[in-house]
Image (cartoon, chains in turn blue, red):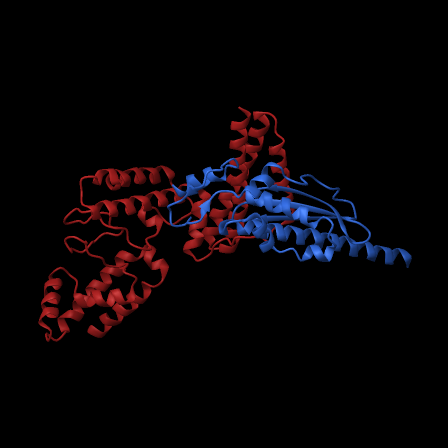
Length: 165
Length: 276
């Protein structure tokens, strides 16, 4: 019973609050309006050119729930993130977390973006305890994208050194 | 000879702490223990009359208060239970009804779903047999059969019936079955990112998901669904092999992959209903 009710709640257009009596779910099961907003009006869905040297791509998966999340950032020559895109296949909370993440990284430097914590994302979206791992996924996606960008920059520098020799 | 039997009790009782024993060797352990218990009680001094009279009485039925105490101290209440109503021993495991007074029993804590559904603890499972057993159990356990019985019996039938439901649902699908088998061995898939995931694999998943999202006809969606089913069938074989060999970490990784494809299968169904 808990399973079917939870499934029903996962439908994005559920605005009705349900209280589940099964012992595993004591929290209210309803998506916060911010999550619904991000789900229905996601910001920055799309892709950036993966091959570009200024683009870092983070691809993460959560095996427990089977969500996959891709987050890409475009960094200018001053080290500032000028654009970000995401694609997430998973629950509403995962989509909202990654959408919010792309909003937040824009305009930040690479080091500032590293400071974004999953707890901030969860707080902003009022994620219930069962969905905290979605915000973790978003934080890991940001870090993966930044790591990929850093790697590309290092490879670039090494190439430049080799070329000059 | 007595000391030998006593050590047998202690050894068997210790073995009860091992989960594997709980699943398979319950009956044989029980028999060994009662036999040893019989030997112990014959040598006990008859000081406490209540105690001794109970022992002697129980002896006739092949068990003793002393052995009950010993077993309860060591075990988690697994090995021997008595009917809550007539106090007769429940000789079956799992015991749904008392053999003597036929009254419904509450479920034993910690009984494995495989035991409840009378299936071997293997990944390959005869789902027909599972379904038959499920229907057979619910025919007798369902709370509707207890509407005119006592409140306690109604409660017990509810908990027992709910447990049978849970066991059936878990064992029916390969994914939940595999995850449950790992859980029995103390392994679970942690929530959060899989840092060891193969990027190629994730990329492939992304592409499949994107293709499904962009599908405009049922044929396209069905094609993706067919591929996913094929992948799931392959994974089922691999997981079975891994679990048989006891390669639990490999099985865990494969089950994680299965989760992703199971999600895709769900999404295909949703897409098909959308496209209709």
